[in-house]
Length: 262
Length: 262
DNA sequence: AGCGATTGTCTCTTACAAGAGACGCGTGTA
DNA sequence: TACACGCGTCTCTTGTAAGAGACAATCGCT
Image: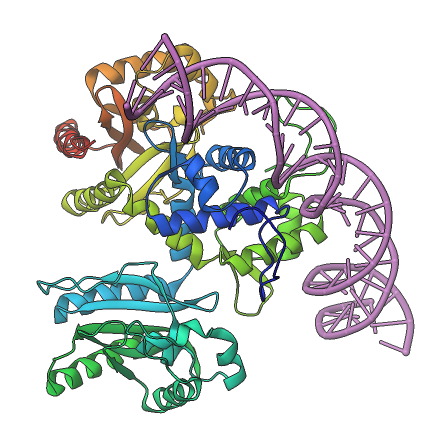
Protein backbone atom coordinates (compact mmCIF):
# COMPACT_ATOMS: atom_id res chain seq x y z
CA UNK A 1 0.00 0.00 0.00
CA UNK A 2 2.22 2.78 1.25
CA UNK A 3 5.63 3.96 0.10
CA UNK A 4 6.07 3.77 -3.62
CA UNK A 5 9.13 1.53 -3.65
CA UNK A 6 8.91 0.98 -7.36
CA UNK A 7 9.51 -2.70 -8.08
CA UNK A 8 7.08 -4.86 -10.00
CA UNK A 9 4.53 -2.86 -11.92
CA UNK A 10 1.26 -4.66 -11.28
CA UNK A 11 -1.18 -5.18 -14.12
CA UNK A 12 -3.77 -2.56 -14.93
CA UNK A 13 -3.93 0.10 -12.24
CA UNK A 14 -1.12 2.48 -11.63
CA UNK A 15 0.58 2.48 -8.29
CA UNK A 16 -1.24 5.03 -6.20
CA UNK A 17 1.92 6.67 -4.99
CA UNK A 18 2.21 9.73 -7.14
CA UNK A 19 0.37 12.99 -7.25
CA UNK A 20 -3.33 12.47 -7.50
CA UNK A 21 -5.97 14.79 -8.87
CA UNK A 22 -8.04 16.32 -6.10
CA UNK A 23 -11.30 15.21 -7.62
CA UNK A 24 -10.17 11.61 -7.69
CA UNK A 25 -9.21 11.81 -4.06
CA UNK A 26 -12.67 13.09 -3.31
CA UNK A 27 -14.29 10.27 -5.20
CA UNK A 28 -12.19 7.81 -3.22
CA UNK A 29 -13.18 9.51 0.01
CA UNK A 30 -16.87 9.21 -0.81
CA UNK A 31 -16.49 5.60 -1.81
CA UNK A 32 -14.59 4.88 1.35
CA UNK A 33 -17.27 6.43 3.53
CA UNK A 34 -19.80 4.35 1.64
CA UNK A 35 -18.00 1.19 2.66
CA UNK A 36 -17.47 2.17 6.28
CA UNK A 37 -21.10 3.20 6.64
CA UNK A 38 -20.24 5.44 9.55
CA UNK A 39 -18.45 8.61 10.54
CA UNK A 40 -14.68 8.40 10.62
CA UNK A 41 -11.80 10.58 11.81
CA UNK A 42 -9.96 12.59 9.20
CA UNK A 43 -6.64 10.96 10.03
CA UNK A 44 -8.09 7.52 9.56
CA UNK A 45 -9.79 8.68 6.42
CA UNK A 46 -6.44 9.76 5.01
CA UNK A 47 -5.04 6.33 5.82
CA UNK A 48 -8.10 4.64 4.41
CA UNK A 49 -7.82 6.23 1.00
CA UNK A 50 -4.05 6.27 1.18
CA UNK A 51 -3.82 10.02 0.75
CA UNK A 52 -1.49 12.53 2.40
CA UNK A 53 -2.88 14.00 5.58
CA UNK A 54 -2.49 17.60 4.55
CA UNK A 55 -4.35 17.02 1.31
CA UNK A 56 -7.10 15.16 3.06
CA UNK A 57 -7.68 17.98 5.51
CA UNK A 58 -7.97 20.46 2.67
CA UNK A 59 -10.37 18.36 0.67
CA UNK A 60 -12.52 17.48 3.65
CA UNK A 61 -12.84 21.14 4.53
CA UNK A 62 -14.03 21.93 1.04
CA UNK A 63 -16.54 19.13 1.14
CA UNK A 64 -17.82 20.08 4.56
CA UNK A 65 -18.20 23.70 3.48
CA UNK A 66 -20.13 22.53 0.46
CA UNK A 67 -22.35 20.34 2.65
CA UNK A 68 -21.43 17.10 0.90
CA UNK A 69 -19.90 15.95 4.15
CA UNK A 70 -20.76 16.85 7.72
CA UNK A 71 -18.69 16.90 10.88
CA UNK A 72 -20.06 14.54 13.47
CA UNK A 73 -21.00 15.95 16.87
CA UNK A 74 -17.60 16.18 18.52
CA UNK A 75 -16.13 17.81 15.44
CA UNK A 76 -13.56 15.21 14.66
CA UNK A 77 -15.30 12.65 12.54
CA UNK A 78 -16.92 13.15 9.16
CA UNK A 79 -19.65 11.42 7.24
CA UNK A 80 -22.00 12.13 4.38
CA UNK A 81 -23.86 15.41 4.51
CA UNK A 82 -27.28 16.76 3.74
CA UNK A 83 -26.33 17.93 0.28
CA UNK A 84 -25.74 14.38 -0.81
CA UNK A 85 -29.11 13.44 0.53
CA UNK A 86 -30.73 16.26 -1.42
CA UNK A 87 -28.95 15.33 -4.63
CA UNK A 88 -29.98 11.75 -4.05
CA UNK A 89 -33.59 12.78 -3.76
CA UNK A 90 -33.23 14.75 -6.97
CA UNK A 91 -32.06 11.57 -8.62
CA UNK A 92 -35.05 9.64 -7.36
CA UNK A 93 -37.33 12.43 -8.47
CA UNK A 94 -35.96 12.40 -11.98
CA UNK A 95 -36.06 8.66 -12.28
CA UNK A 96 -39.48 7.14 -12.70
CA UNK A 97 -38.20 3.62 -12.75
CA UNK A 98 -36.45 3.94 -9.43
CA UNK A 99 -39.36 5.72 -7.80
CA UNK A 100 -41.92 3.17 -8.89
CA UNK A 101 -39.50 0.32 -8.41
CA UNK A 102 -38.95 1.15 -4.76
CA UNK A 103 -42.67 1.21 -4.26
CA UNK A 104 -43.16 -2.10 -6.00
CA UNK A 105 -40.40 -3.77 -4.02
CA UNK A 106 -41.93 -2.64 -0.77
CA UNK A 107 -45.31 -3.95 -1.86
CA UNK A 108 -43.86 -7.25 -2.92
CA UNK A 109 -42.07 -7.92 0.33
CA UNK A 110 -45.13 -6.93 2.33
CA UNK A 111 -47.39 -9.20 0.29
CA UNK A 112 -45.11 -12.20 0.22
CA UNK A 113 -43.26 -11.73 3.49
CA UNK A 114 -40.02 -12.43 1.66
CA UNK A 115 -37.00 -10.19 1.25
CA UNK A 116 -37.31 -8.26 -1.96
CA UNK A 117 -34.83 -6.13 -3.87
CA UNK A 118 -34.46 -3.81 -6.82
CA UNK A 119 -31.13 -4.24 -8.57
CA UNK A 120 -29.30 -2.33 -11.27
CA UNK A 121 -25.95 -2.08 -12.93
CA UNK A 122 -23.83 0.66 -11.45
CA UNK A 123 -20.66 1.39 -13.42
CA UNK A 124 -20.47 -2.22 -14.43
CA UNK A 125 -21.15 -3.57 -10.96
CA UNK A 126 -24.24 -5.27 -9.68
CA UNK A 127 -25.87 -3.07 -7.07
CA UNK A 128 -28.78 -3.53 -4.71
CA UNK A 129 -30.52 -0.22 -5.21
CA UNK A 130 -33.37 -0.78 -2.81
CA UNK A 131 -34.18 -3.59 -0.43
CA UNK A 132 -37.12 -4.42 1.77
CA UNK A 133 -36.45 -6.97 4.51
CA UNK A 134 -39.49 -9.23 4.63
CA UNK A 135 -40.92 -10.78 7.75
CA UNK A 136 -38.97 -13.98 8.29
CA UNK A 137 -37.50 -14.45 11.75
CA UNK A 138 -33.94 -14.95 10.51
CA UNK A 139 -32.48 -12.04 8.70
CA UNK A 140 -31.56 -12.56 5.11
CA UNK A 141 -28.66 -10.28 4.45
CA UNK A 142 -29.04 -7.58 1.83
CA UNK A 143 -28.30 -3.95 2.36
CA UNK A 144 -29.11 -1.09 0.06
CA UNK A 145 -26.04 -0.02 -1.84
CA UNK A 146 -24.31 -3.35 -1.50
CA UNK A 147 -22.21 -4.33 -4.47
CA UNK A 148 -21.74 -7.96 -5.38
CA UNK A 149 -19.96 -9.71 -8.26
CA UNK A 150 -22.37 -10.27 -11.13
CA UNK A 151 -21.86 -14.05 -11.41
CA UNK A 152 -22.99 -14.60 -7.84
CA UNK A 153 -26.54 -13.56 -8.49
CA UNK A 154 -29.62 -14.37 -10.49
CA UNK A 155 -30.12 -10.71 -11.26
CA UNK A 156 -26.64 -10.51 -12.68
CA UNK A 157 -27.56 -13.06 -15.31
CA UNK A 158 -30.55 -11.04 -16.38
CA UNK A 159 -28.83 -7.67 -16.34
CA UNK A 160 -26.27 -8.88 -18.84
CA UNK A 161 -28.83 -10.39 -21.20
CA UNK A 162 -28.36 -9.08 -24.70
CA UNK A 163 -24.68 -8.28 -24.35
CA UNK A 164 -21.99 -9.85 -26.46
CA UNK A 165 -19.68 -12.40 -24.90
CA UNK A 166 -16.76 -10.00 -25.23
CA UNK A 167 -18.65 -7.30 -23.37
CA UNK A 168 -19.56 -9.72 -20.62
CA UNK A 169 -15.97 -10.82 -20.38
CA UNK A 170 -14.97 -7.21 -19.89
CA UNK A 171 -17.35 -6.73 -17.01
CA UNK A 172 -16.42 -9.68 -14.85
CA UNK A 173 -12.97 -10.16 -13.41
CA UNK A 174 -11.47 -13.51 -12.62
CA UNK A 175 -12.11 -12.92 -8.94
CA UNK A 176 -15.78 -12.36 -9.64
CA UNK A 177 -16.07 -15.89 -10.97
CA UNK A 178 -14.96 -17.38 -7.68
CA UNK A 179 -18.09 -18.03 -5.63
CA UNK A 180 -18.21 -17.43 -1.87
CA UNK A 181 -17.88 -21.16 -1.21
CA UNK A 182 -14.67 -21.29 -3.19
CA UNK A 183 -15.96 -22.93 -6.34
CA UNK A 184 -14.86 -21.32 -9.56
CA UNK A 185 -17.46 -20.67 -12.22
CA UNK A 186 -16.41 -21.13 -15.82
CA UNK A 187 -16.96 -18.03 -17.93
CA UNK A 188 -18.59 -20.09 -20.67
CA UNK A 189 -21.09 -21.51 -18.21
CA UNK A 190 -21.89 -18.03 -17.02
CA UNK A 191 -22.44 -16.82 -20.57
CA UNK A 192 -24.68 -19.80 -21.20
CA UNK A 193 -26.68 -18.99 -18.06
CA UNK A 194 -27.17 -15.48 -19.32
CA UNK A 195 -28.43 -16.65 -22.68
CA UNK A 196 -30.83 -19.04 -21.00
CA UNK A 197 -32.12 -16.39 -18.60
CA UNK A 198 -32.71 -14.08 -21.53
CA UNK A 199 -34.97 -16.62 -23.20
CA UNK A 200 -36.90 -17.84 -20.19
CA UNK A 201 -37.48 -14.30 -18.94
CA UNK A 202 -36.50 -15.02 -15.36
CA UNK A 203 -33.68 -16.60 -13.42
CA UNK A 204 -33.24 -18.67 -10.29
CA UNK A 205 -29.99 -19.39 -8.53
CA UNK A 206 -29.61 -21.64 -5.51
CA UNK A 207 -26.97 -21.37 -2.84
CA UNK A 208 -24.67 -19.07 -4.73
CA UNK A 209 -24.25 -16.11 -2.40
CA UNK A 210 -24.80 -18.32 0.61
CA UNK A 211 -25.81 -21.92 1.12
CA UNK A 212 -29.20 -21.27 2.68
CA UNK A 213 -30.98 -19.08 0.18
CA UNK A 214 -32.07 -19.04 -3.38
CA UNK A 215 -32.59 -15.98 -5.45
CA UNK A 216 -35.46 -15.42 -7.87
CA UNK A 217 -35.16 -12.59 -10.35
CA UNK A 218 -37.15 -11.04 -13.18
CA UNK A 219 -36.06 -8.37 -15.64
CA UNK A 220 -37.35 -4.83 -15.91
CA UNK A 221 -37.01 -3.39 -19.41
CA UNK A 222 -36.47 0.25 -20.30
CA UNK A 223 -36.74 -0.51 -23.98
CA UNK A 224 -37.37 -3.72 -25.92
CA UNK A 225 -34.45 -6.00 -25.17
CA UNK A 226 -32.75 -3.52 -22.84
CA UNK A 227 -32.72 -4.73 -19.25
CA UNK A 228 -32.55 -1.68 -17.03
CA UNK A 229 -33.06 -3.36 -13.68
CA UNK A 230 -34.25 -6.51 -12.01
CA UNK A 231 -36.61 -7.23 -9.19
CA UNK A 232 -35.78 -10.17 -7.07
CA UNK A 233 -36.84 -12.21 -4.10
CA UNK A 234 -34.45 -13.92 -1.72
CA UNK A 235 -36.04 -17.00 -0.18
CA UNK A 236 -34.90 -19.98 1.90
CA UNK A 237 -33.33 -22.64 -0.27
CA UNK A 238 -35.84 -25.25 0.83
CA UNK A 239 -38.84 -23.29 -0.44
CA UNK A 240 -41.16 -25.75 -2.18
CA UNK A 241 -41.24 -25.90 -5.94
CA UNK A 242 -44.88 -24.91 -5.92
CA UNK A 243 -44.39 -21.77 -3.91
CA UNK A 244 -41.30 -20.90 -5.86
CA UNK A 245 -43.32 -21.06 -9.03
CA UNK A 246 -45.99 -18.84 -7.55
CA UNK A 247 -43.45 -16.27 -6.46
CA UNK A 248 -41.77 -16.24 -9.84
CA UNK A 249 -45.11 -15.63 -11.47
CA UNK A 250 -45.83 -12.74 -9.16
CA UNK A 251 -42.35 -11.35 -9.64
CA UNK A 252 -42.53 -11.46 -13.42
CA UNK A 253 -45.89 -9.79 -13.32
CA UNK A 254 -44.67 -6.90 -11.24
CA UNK A 255 -41.46 -6.52 -13.16
CA UNK A 256 -43.47 -6.37 -16.39
CA UNK A 257 -45.63 -3.61 -14.92
CA UNK A 258 -42.51 -1.61 -14.14
CA UNK A 259 -41.28 -2.06 -17.68
CA UNK A 260 -44.13 -0.18 -19.30
CA UNK A 261 -42.82 3.36 -19.09
CA UNK A 262 -40.08 4.79 -21.30
CA UNK B 1 -28.11 33.44 -11.02
CA UNK B 2 -26.61 36.45 -12.74
CA UNK B 3 -24.11 36.81 -15.50
CA UNK B 4 -20.50 37.19 -14.54
CA UNK B 5 -19.65 40.18 -16.73
CA UNK B 6 -16.94 41.64 -14.56
CA UNK B 7 -17.76 45.24 -13.70
CA UNK B 8 -18.28 46.21 -10.09
CA UNK B 9 -16.48 43.83 -7.78
CA UNK B 10 -19.18 42.66 -5.43
CA UNK B 11 -18.34 42.20 -1.79
CA UNK B 12 -16.79 38.96 -0.70
CA UNK B 13 -16.63 36.58 -3.62
CA UNK B 14 -13.90 36.75 -6.20
CA UNK B 15 -14.77 37.19 -9.82
CA UNK B 16 -15.11 33.72 -11.25
CA UNK B 17 -12.94 34.44 -14.23
CA UNK B 18 -9.59 32.94 -13.40
CA UNK B 19 -8.36 29.43 -13.05
CA UNK B 20 -10.61 27.44 -10.81
CA UNK B 21 -9.89 24.33 -8.82
CA UNK B 22 -11.48 21.27 -10.37
CA UNK B 23 -13.26 20.30 -7.20
CA UNK B 24 -14.93 23.69 -6.96
CA UNK B 25 -16.10 23.39 -10.51
CA UNK B 26 -17.61 20.05 -9.66
CA UNK B 27 -19.39 21.46 -6.66
CA UNK B 28 -20.83 24.19 -8.86
CA UNK B 29 -21.91 21.63 -11.40
CA UNK B 30 -23.77 19.62 -8.80
CA UNK B 31 -25.40 22.71 -7.39
CA UNK B 32 -26.40 23.81 -10.85
CA UNK B 33 -28.02 20.48 -11.62
CA UNK B 34 -29.84 20.75 -8.33
CA UNK B 35 -31.39 24.02 -9.42
CA UNK B 36 -32.29 22.88 -12.92
CA UNK B 37 -33.85 19.68 -11.60
CA UNK B 38 -33.39 18.01 -14.94
CA UNK B 39 -30.82 16.65 -17.33
CA UNK B 40 -28.88 19.21 -19.27
CA UNK B 41 -26.43 19.25 -22.17
CA UNK B 42 -22.77 19.53 -21.37
CA UNK B 43 -22.37 22.68 -23.39
CA UNK B 44 -25.19 24.38 -21.55
CA UNK B 45 -23.79 23.09 -18.30
CA UNK B 46 -20.49 24.77 -19.06
CA UNK B 47 -22.33 28.01 -19.74
CA UNK B 48 -24.43 27.57 -16.65
CA UNK B 49 -21.51 27.30 -14.28
CA UNK B 50 -19.44 29.68 -16.37
CA UNK B 51 -16.67 27.19 -16.93
CA UNK B 52 -14.56 26.49 -20.03
CA UNK B 53 -16.01 23.87 -22.25
CA UNK B 54 -12.93 21.66 -22.35
CA UNK B 55 -12.71 21.59 -18.59
CA UNK B 56 -16.37 20.80 -18.23
CA UNK B 57 -16.10 17.84 -20.57
CA UNK B 58 -13.22 16.44 -18.57
CA UNK B 59 -14.93 16.84 -15.25
CA UNK B 60 -18.23 15.47 -16.44
CA UNK B 61 -16.49 12.42 -17.80
CA UNK B 62 -14.86 11.79 -14.43
CA UNK B 63 -18.15 12.18 -12.66
CA UNK B 64 -19.99 9.93 -15.07
CA UNK B 65 -17.31 7.27 -14.74
CA UNK B 66 -17.63 7.52 -11.00
CA UNK B 67 -21.40 7.21 -11.23
CA UNK B 68 -22.11 10.54 -9.56
CA UNK B 69 -23.64 11.68 -12.82
CA UNK B 70 -25.35 9.71 -15.55
CA UNK B 71 -25.78 10.36 -19.25
CA UNK B 72 -29.39 10.63 -20.22
CA UNK B 73 -30.77 8.25 -22.84
CA UNK B 74 -29.57 9.93 -26.01
CA UNK B 75 -26.10 10.35 -24.54
CA UNK B 76 -25.96 14.09 -24.68
CA UNK B 77 -27.47 15.31 -21.46
CA UNK B 78 -26.33 14.60 -17.92
CA UNK B 79 -28.01 14.49 -14.56
CA UNK B 80 -27.42 13.06 -11.13
CA UNK B 81 -26.41 9.42 -10.99
CA UNK B 82 -27.08 6.37 -8.90
CA UNK B 83 -24.02 6.87 -6.73
CA UNK B 84 -25.45 10.07 -5.37
CA UNK B 85 -28.65 8.27 -4.57
CA UNK B 86 -26.73 5.58 -2.72
CA UNK B 87 -24.70 8.11 -0.76
CA UNK B 88 -27.90 9.91 0.05
CA UNK B 89 -29.42 6.75 1.41
CA UNK B 90 -26.30 6.23 3.50
CA UNK B 91 -26.86 9.65 4.96
CA UNK B 92 -30.45 8.86 5.82
CA UNK B 93 -29.37 5.57 7.32
CA UNK B 94 -26.83 7.22 9.57
CA UNK B 95 -29.17 9.94 10.65
CA UNK B 96 -31.89 8.90 13.04
CA UNK B 97 -33.43 12.33 13.17
CA UNK B 98 -33.91 12.50 9.44
CA UNK B 99 -35.22 8.98 9.18
CA UNK B 100 -37.76 9.42 11.91
CA UNK B 101 -38.52 12.96 10.88
CA UNK B 102 -39.49 11.92 7.37
CA UNK B 103 -41.81 9.34 8.83
CA UNK B 104 -43.37 11.80 11.22
CA UNK B 105 -43.91 14.41 8.52
CA UNK B 106 -45.66 11.87 6.34
CA UNK B 107 -47.88 10.88 9.24
CA UNK B 108 -48.68 14.43 10.06
CA UNK B 109 -49.76 15.39 6.60
CA UNK B 110 -51.84 12.26 6.26
CA UNK B 111 -53.58 12.87 9.58
CA UNK B 112 -54.22 16.57 9.10
CA UNK B 113 -54.52 16.73 5.33
CA UNK B 114 -52.22 19.74 5.37
CA UNK B 115 -48.85 20.18 3.73
CA UNK B 116 -46.13 19.24 6.18
CA UNK B 117 -42.38 19.73 6.08
CA UNK B 118 -39.18 18.91 7.87
CA UNK B 119 -36.69 21.76 7.75
CA UNK B 120 -33.04 22.15 8.68
CA UNK B 121 -30.15 24.50 8.32
CA UNK B 122 -27.90 23.55 5.44
CA UNK B 123 -24.64 25.53 5.33
CA UNK B 124 -26.39 28.50 6.81
CA UNK B 125 -29.40 28.27 4.55
CA UNK B 126 -32.91 27.24 5.41
CA UNK B 127 -33.70 24.02 3.59
CA UNK B 128 -36.83 21.94 3.18
CA UNK B 129 -35.41 18.51 3.78
CA UNK B 130 -38.59 16.56 3.35
CA UNK B 131 -42.09 17.56 2.35
CA UNK B 132 -45.39 15.79 2.16
CA UNK B 133 -48.05 17.50 0.06
CA UNK B 134 -51.33 17.15 1.96
CA UNK B 135 -54.72 16.64 0.38
CA UNK B 136 -55.98 20.13 -0.39
CA UNK B 137 -57.15 20.69 -3.93
CA UNK B 138 -54.86 23.65 -4.58
CA UNK B 139 -51.20 22.85 -4.42
CA UNK B 140 -49.23 24.61 -1.76
CA UNK B 141 -45.76 25.00 -3.15
CA UNK B 142 -42.91 23.34 -1.31
CA UNK B 143 -40.39 21.07 -2.89
CA UNK B 144 -37.83 18.93 -1.15
CA UNK B 145 -34.44 20.58 -1.34
CA UNK B 146 -35.82 24.05 -1.81
CA UNK B 147 -33.77 26.77 -0.19
CA UNK B 148 -35.44 29.92 1.09
CA UNK B 149 -34.11 32.96 2.98
CA UNK B 150 -34.39 32.39 6.72
CA UNK B 151 -36.42 35.53 7.48
CA UNK B 152 -39.23 34.44 5.17
CA UNK B 153 -40.23 31.49 7.30
CA UNK B 154 -41.49 30.52 10.72
CA UNK B 155 -38.99 27.69 10.83
CA UNK B 156 -36.19 30.11 10.22
CA UNK B 157 -37.04 31.93 13.43
CA UNK B 158 -36.85 28.72 15.41
CA UNK B 159 -33.71 27.39 13.80
CA UNK B 160 -31.79 30.47 14.85
CA UNK B 161 -33.03 30.39 18.43
CA UNK B 162 -30.14 30.51 20.85
CA UNK B 163 -27.72 32.24 18.51
CA UNK B 164 -26.17 35.61 19.28
CA UNK B 165 -27.31 38.62 17.35
CA UNK B 166 -23.95 38.85 15.66
CA UNK B 167 -24.18 35.27 14.48
CA UNK B 168 -27.65 35.84 13.13
CA UNK B 169 -26.49 38.93 11.34
CA UNK B 170 -23.79 36.87 9.69
CA UNK B 171 -26.29 34.35 8.38
CA UNK B 172 -28.77 36.63 6.69
CA UNK B 173 -27.87 38.92 3.85
CA UNK B 174 -29.60 42.19 3.14
CA UNK B 175 -31.44 40.55 0.26
CA UNK B 176 -32.79 37.90 2.57
CA UNK B 177 -34.59 40.56 4.57
CA UNK B 178 -36.60 41.66 1.57
CA UNK B 179 -39.81 39.67 1.56
CA UNK B 180 -41.38 38.33 -1.66
CA UNK B 181 -43.96 41.13 -1.59
CA UNK B 182 -41.23 43.74 -1.53
CA UNK B 183 -41.47 44.77 2.10
CA UNK B 184 -38.16 44.98 3.91
CA UNK B 185 -37.87 43.39 7.31
CA UNK B 186 -35.76 45.19 9.91
CA UNK B 187 -32.98 43.02 11.32
CA UNK B 188 -33.87 44.02 14.86
CA UNK B 189 -37.45 42.90 14.35
CA UNK B 190 -36.23 39.61 13.03
CA UNK B 191 -33.95 39.11 16.02
CA UNK B 192 -36.85 39.95 18.32
CA UNK B 193 -39.03 37.41 16.53
CA UNK B 194 -36.37 34.78 17.10
CA UNK B 195 -36.15 35.53 20.80
CA UNK B 196 -39.92 35.33 21.10
CA UNK B 197 -40.11 32.06 19.20
CA UNK B 198 -37.47 30.62 21.47
CA UNK B 199 -39.56 31.33 24.52
CA UNK B 200 -42.97 30.35 23.23
CA UNK B 201 -41.62 27.13 21.74
CA UNK B 202 -43.33 27.54 18.40
CA UNK B 203 -43.76 30.10 15.67
CA UNK B 204 -46.45 31.24 13.28
CA UNK B 205 -45.95 33.52 10.31
CA UNK B 206 -48.73 34.76 8.05
CA UNK B 207 -48.42 35.71 4.42
CA UNK B 208 -44.66 35.94 4.35
CA UNK B 209 -43.67 33.56 1.58
CA UNK B 210 -46.94 34.17 -0.21
CA UNK B 211 -50.13 36.01 0.62
CA UNK B 212 -52.39 32.99 0.90
CA UNK B 213 -50.70 30.79 3.43
CA UNK B 214 -49.50 30.80 6.95
CA UNK B 215 -46.75 28.68 8.32
CA UNK B 216 -46.79 26.91 11.69
CA UNK B 217 -43.53 25.58 13.00
CA UNK B 218 -42.21 23.75 16.07
CA UNK B 219 -38.59 23.05 17.01
CA UNK B 220 -36.87 19.67 17.15
CA UNK B 221 -33.98 19.60 19.61
CA UNK B 222 -30.85 17.49 19.31
CA UNK B 223 -29.63 18.67 22.71
CA UNK B 224 -31.12 20.99 25.30
CA UNK B 225 -31.34 24.40 23.67
CA UNK B 226 -29.93 23.20 20.38
CA UNK B 227 -32.53 23.34 17.59
CA UNK B 228 -31.56 20.77 15.02
CA UNK B 229 -34.62 20.94 12.81
CA UNK B 230 -38.20 22.10 12.67
CA UNK B 231 -41.43 20.48 11.66
CA UNK B 232 -43.95 22.72 10.06
CA UNK B 233 -47.38 22.87 8.54
CA UNK B 234 -48.35 25.17 5.70
CA UNK B 235 -52.03 26.05 5.87
CA UNK B 236 -54.37 28.53 4.16
CA UNK B 237 -54.13 31.94 5.73
CA UNK B 238 -57.83 31.96 6.64
CA UNK B 239 -57.58 28.85 8.80
CA UNK B 240 -59.62 29.49 11.96
CA UNK B 241 -57.87 30.34 15.16
CA UNK B 242 -59.29 27.26 16.79
CA UNK B 243 -57.99 24.85 14.21
CA UNK B 244 -54.68 26.65 14.07
CA UNK B 245 -54.33 26.14 17.80
CA UNK B 246 -55.13 22.46 17.45
CA UNK B 247 -52.57 22.01 14.71
CA UNK B 248 -49.90 23.81 16.69
CA UNK B 249 -50.57 21.54 19.62
CA UNK B 250 -50.24 18.47 17.44
CA UNK B 251 -47.13 19.82 15.79
CA UNK B 252 -45.41 20.59 19.07
CA UNK B 253 -46.26 17.16 20.34
CA UNK B 254 -44.73 15.41 17.36
CA UNK B 255 -41.69 17.66 17.29
CA UNK B 256 -41.11 16.90 20.96
CA UNK B 257 -41.26 13.18 20.24
CA UNK B 258 -38.59 13.59 17.61
CA UNK B 259 -36.40 15.47 20.05
CA UNK B 260 -35.96 12.58 22.44
CA UNK B 261 -33.02 10.80 20.88
CA UNK B 262 -29.40 11.97 21.01
C1' DA C 1 5.30 14.29 35.23
C1' DG C 2 7.14 12.01 31.01
C1' DC C 3 6.56 9.98 26.59
C1' DG C 4 4.53 8.60 22.14
C1' DA C 5 0.73 9.08 19.16
C1' DT C 6 -2.61 12.01 16.98
C1' DT C 7 -4.63 16.25 15.55
C1' DG C 8 -5.03 20.56 13.10
C1' DT C 9 -2.32 24.28 10.78
C1' DC C 10 1.23 26.25 7.92
C1' DT C 11 4.99 26.81 4.41
C1' DC C 12 7.33 25.82 0.16
C1' DT C 13 8.29 23.24 -4.22
C1' DT C 14 7.21 21.28 -8.45
C1' DA C 15 4.48 18.04 -11.03
C1' DC C 16 0.58 18.57 -13.44
C1' DA C 17 -4.38 19.91 -14.15
C1' DA C 18 -7.13 23.84 -15.87
C1' DG C 19 -7.87 26.34 -19.57
C1' DA C 20 -7.29 28.46 -24.45
C1' DG C 21 -8.02 27.33 -28.78
C1' DA C 22 -7.80 24.67 -32.94
C1' DC C 23 -9.94 20.78 -35.43
C1' DG C 24 -13.33 17.61 -37.63
C1' DC C 25 -17.90 16.16 -37.65
C1' DG C 26 -22.82 16.22 -37.94
C1' DT C 27 -27.13 19.22 -38.45
C1' DG C 28 -30.21 22.59 -39.45
C1' DT C 29 -31.47 26.48 -42.54
C1' DA C 30 -31.05 29.94 -46.03
C1' DT D 1 -24.46 23.91 -51.94
C1' DA D 2 -22.76 26.79 -48.69
C1' DC D 3 -22.77 28.59 -44.18
C1' DA D 4 -23.30 28.93 -39.26
C1' DC D 5 -23.58 26.48 -35.19
C1' DG D 6 -22.98 23.10 -31.49
C1' DC D 7 -20.78 18.98 -30.17
C1' DG D 8 -16.77 16.03 -28.76
C1' DT D 9 -11.78 15.45 -28.92
C1' DC D 10 -6.89 16.93 -28.81
C1' DT D 11 -2.69 19.60 -27.97
C1' DC D 12 0.17 22.77 -25.49
C1' DT D 13 1.29 26.26 -21.76
C1' DT D 14 1.47 27.95 -17.38
C1' DG D 15 -0.62 29.10 -13.01
C1' DT D 16 -1.35 26.54 -9.08
C1' DA D 17 -2.94 22.77 -6.25
C1' DA D 18 -1.10 18.37 -4.32
C1' DG D 19 1.98 16.84 -1.37
C1' DA D 20 6.20 16.60 1.93
C1' DG D 21 7.29 17.87 6.13
C1' DA D 22 7.83 20.78 10.14
C1' DC D 23 5.28 22.61 14.12
C1' DA D 24 2.57 23.34 18.41
C1' DA D 25 -1.19 21.62 20.95
C1' DT D 26 -3.79 17.64 22.95
C1' DC D 27 -4.62 13.30 24.32
C1' DG D 28 -3.83 8.86 26.59
C1' DC D 29 -1.00 5.82 28.82
C1' DT D 30 2.38 4.29 32.43
